[in-house]
Amino acid sequence: MGEGAKVTEVVQGSRPSPSWRNVCLTIGNFDGVHLGHQQLVHELGRMSQRKGTQGVALTFFPHPAEVLTAGRPQRLLPLEDRIRMLLSVGATGAWVLPFDRKLSSLSAERFVEDVLLSRSAISGLVVGPDFRFGANREGDSALLAWFGERKGFEVSVVPPLEVDGMRVSSSFIRRLLMEGKVADATRMLGRTYRVKGTVVRGKQVGTSLGFPTANLCLSDDVLVPANGIYVIRMRIGRTPSESTPLDGVANVGHRPTLDNGPLQVEAHLFGIERPLYGEVVTLEFLERIRDERRFGTLEELRAAIRQDVERARRYFGRQ
Image (tube, rainbow, N blue to C red; front, side):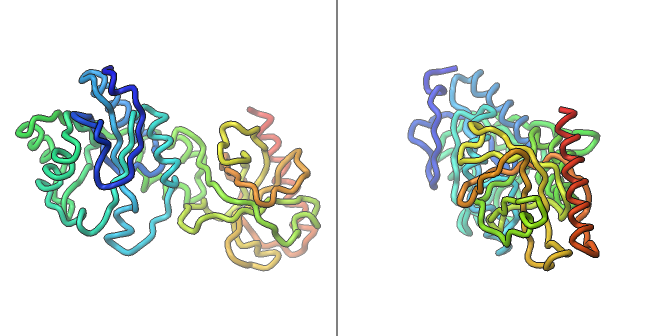
């Protein structure tokens, strides 16, 4: 790989790094950086190595759906983690291109000319078979290959990836999580699904039941799995890879036995007594135990939590 390919850069803005000339790009939202996305980045690495240049992942912020439909899609990964993961799986740079109405109105040809060639002078492009670009999604991978032949850049279209006979996609992973199928989502992500939040003070109900919990405050655009009880692992700190994992169980839901209030995520951790108020934590969802349900008495709830804890301990005992 050429000397320029050794430098890792992250650029957020309408223009890429001046050092990115004749680079190879892969383009997408990359929400979740799942195994399909990783396959694109691996192909990007092979192409850029062959050409002796950098392999840059181009992604968008905000999400196009937020601009085009005025919605706020629930995300699998915050932007900073998306960039970190793209770099960790092989991209040598990341370009976060602001997505707005002006960009969305560019024709397919203008997108190629103004963004890919004028701004970054690409030598190669890696996309998936469903890649769309230009106003009203008028351009596809076939049109991109046509432009490549005429403008002098290589286009590699990576076949779709399947896991357990199902095509890997961010939308399908969201569906799995909304159904509580966190183990299936793990297989498509290539890692456990996780959310990051801050521990806040709760009503101490868990403590009164004998199972103190860490109550998480999450961003409202983070996708939380379906209501239920889960085997979880928690890591403390902004750099969770450097912290000791804590095993436990978590409840996602409205606590129907207690107050049927707003959605809460609360985790009971094994082997830790100190309060975690104010700590930034990462919660990994490993396995779903059961649905959330309403119990007739607090004693029935306590007995159910005890069974949940026992099942979680058996899960960790198998590892």
